Image 1 (cartoon, protein in one colour):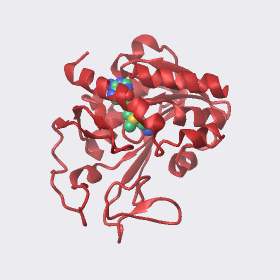
Image 2: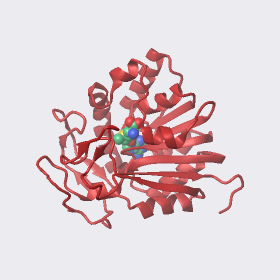
Image 3: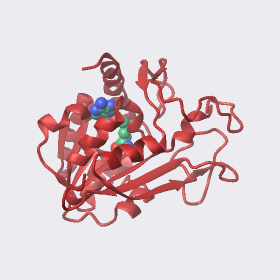
Length: 269
Ligand SMILES: C[S@@+](CC[C@H](N)C(=O)[O-])C[C@H]1O[C@@H](n2cnc3c(N)ncnc32)[C@H](O)[C@@H]1O
């Protein structure tokens, strides 16, 4: 495995345990029967009863098992062995049927030979991927003809502005066109700031990179949606609204986007 991905894997193996113990990931609520998916994907993916669903980069599986709770036959893939071990143990403990596979997403076609009605990925997945075109080809290869790919992800505009404590307004510090790899030095984990995670390597993609990669992989884009409200307080100056989402006053930028893209019944490439 690429050295940068190896370093990310070490960090994610540490983060799996930190996140499972954090309030942010809501494991206690999940154990009590709650669905931890966000309203955006629940509404946009719609009825999954009886459908096969692949969750790419499933972390320790709470979103995957929430889809299982709503009726999907779920497979989750993640490269973190700690995350997959946790997902399997929660699945066994709560008797939620789901299959979890440990694999680098770029090697997933070697270990997973099925196709799915729905291929899903969400929040915080893209920035770990060094090759967006290959990622899109792999995602598309897992969609059954007639099925769809869906993603909900943080908007690249949120990555351009400083968000450290004390920031009071949007301050663009990175160009939207700066897509080179970034090294994130060791620092506090985002869900538990008392825990320090090691250096990671991250990539930023423009919306055009994502849409073009999916289209080039043979998927037909049904929509690209942009949302002002964020699922967590990304900037210290965000306010939480009644719907639970975090807004910047005046909604100056989108903070989340979603894409639905369908695989044609016959290949049209
Ligand atoms: C922010 S989390 C995604 C969280 C997700 N929204 C959820 O269900 O909780 C990012 C995940 O990507 C995984 N990941 C990062 N790089 C990967 C790779 N190359 N292959 C597979 N998984 C990877 C990490 O292990 C981590 O679980």
